[in-house]
Image (cartoon, protein in one colour):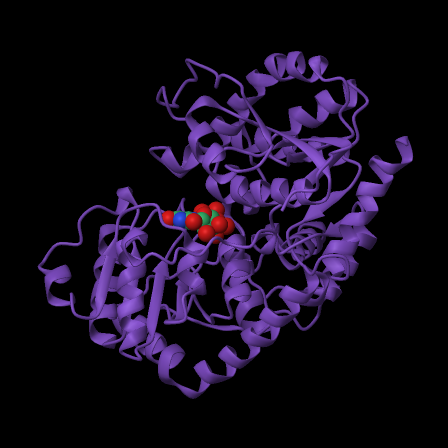
Length: 464
Ligand code: UDP
């Protein structure tokens, strides 16, 4: 519930991709509850999603036109999950810079902005805030484990060293961590990096350098060593998450109004059956060959499953859906992932380990079968399996973290997660973290709630 009289005003500018937008919209809810008026910036094509997320709140939404005639970006695409190829991500982010004049016109029209929360991929919004003297917080949608580890490894220059891609790198700061060059995105391993990737990387760093601190979508109890490291070695980092708990989800009680897949889960619950949830986020690109192995692995495992498939992944073919219909449901819609994870029948999550998915799984007390694909997901998978031990990992056929997964390697680990001894251990552990996550977000007393007091006091109360 929102506080009655907002006294302060925050501007929130999420980057246009679901994994970046969703946590910042949760943050909008949280700030509204805490008595701050909120204005969220977005673009016309992203407006409906934003408005739905913020319905029944007093948040204002301002649409800025998305730049037209951007080379390589088909017109009408205003979100990275709609890009024809993920390789266009840097060009997309660089194009957003053209929104800056419109953004500044809007900023100028506000009587007061106490602070701005911006996504690191919108560095130019931070530069505008500097121009207008607005305090600015960079939103960090990554774990402190992944960002701390990336910093240590980048500074040691081990990514450019003579090691083989699957050989372990020595991590001076965290000697117990096992990590290879293959755990990092290939672009970061290229000492000659140039072009849009290079420009995007350098510009993102400028946003970080002019921010007054970082808001991290994590909670201290989950990764204290890494939060402390980030605080010591970079800018002030405030852990204010998991933001997926910022809002009490509305539970639909009328069975007829529930999405078909939730009705299906209800049925499974009545039968006393457990279900594996399978989803690889909004960005993943999975080859047809790899999809075939997933299909066979799920079929052979004999577990119940709910598999969310993106448009890009097209048809599964070969009569698969008909064959598994008693115990498997395939969903091609946008789903409310948190609603699925919270369903009592869900007992495991085959996940790409996007940071939001990891946090949501933790909050729902669901252990993970990690199958990282890109970005910092390989580091998240290491964290999930080796550091906090809330999950297992699929087996690749050549042992490399980036290797192809044959159906046998998937089937074996699915069964282990859902029925095996290792599955039991990680289920117990994830439930412990679920409790800690809830506590961290408790109103007034939780560590994340109190941590958010610090920037709020610094940027709002000081103006009283
Ligand atoms: N998500 C969702 N429904 C879908 C697909 C994704 O609600 O059908 C949400 C998911 O709950 C998470 C976000 O989209 O909050 C995806 O973020 P994540 O970091 O897990 O992965 P990304 O999509 O950025 O790779």
